[in-house]
Length: 86
Image (cartoon, rainbow, N blue to C red; front, side):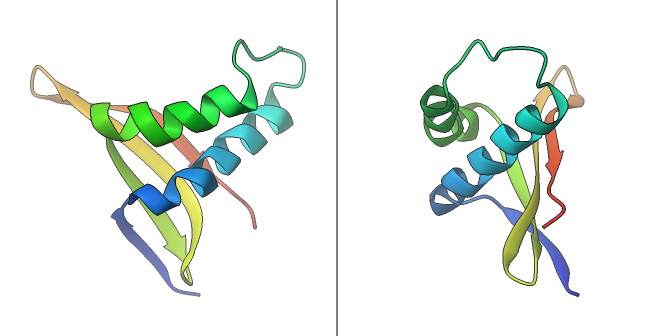
């Protein structure tokens, strides 16, 4: 098992969105999402990478997790942190 961290690239957006959506479905079933799956996918593709630094964890060349951060006032904030068990 080989895990590596790398900057997310545009072609990762669909898989990152899949991880976010799967996590919400698994852990927040009781709370309806204010956004459709398509809106989440568009946000991951078009908004997230422009506003924040997105890093993926690749497990044997397959995305196993994602972390998004941004810096404000010399503090780095984690805004998204998701892992998949696959």
